[in-house]
Image (tube, rainbow, N blue to C red; front, side):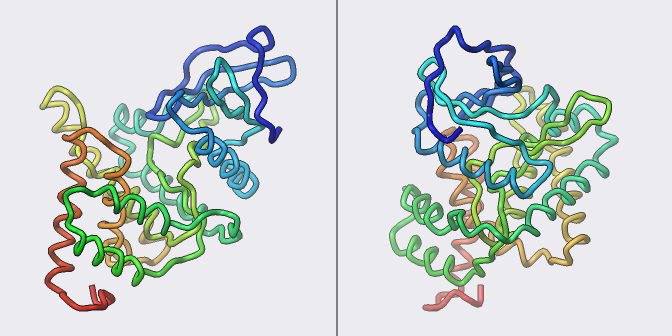
Length: 295
């Protein structure tokens, strides 16, 4: 189903909410010919964004058995939705925080899944990271133009790569089914692109490592500690599987932070990512060469 069809209310049943995010909500959903879930984008999300995720999900679903599958793009109550084959479950972020004893096994499994994604190279139809990075760079109001120029130069020194990159691979986008088999399904292919796997790894590592947002400080302290352990265990497992080094992903930290800053508006959340940019900009300034390849 490639055509965007608006479904009359009497033709479908919208069930319980399964998952809610910053751009969409996932509900149980059924029609006379379909039974599964629908990912309903919020009204402020452009139609082009939803269509891009639909196409990316089709591509990922054709190449990876653990990817969520999509069966069409529709409009429900003036909101665009993707029909997905997804059952009820719990995100791995919730699961690990409830089961601290899984700090070693779950991050290792996550690294294994991520490796399988990056082994896919036949994704010429996907966009590259360059456009998104340069768009994000224009939105950094705390950097003067000469530093933005240096960041552009630096980006061009990094190897492009040809791997399938999820673009937002973290525990929240991995759903553990409630069935006895506890299979894992990977969601949210909206930021998918063709590129260097180390960018994808670095983004995952920093997302996992970023401070917790728990409102009570004592819970925030322990949640942040657990998150850092998870991040370290994930990265160690990925490095053991692939043979990559810390230097391979560290060079992408400022790129990840620039893009992440374009995604969030909350001042407190932005501060941590802003500090990464400022830290790496200092290093680039120290190099002070026309070519930043030695960074």
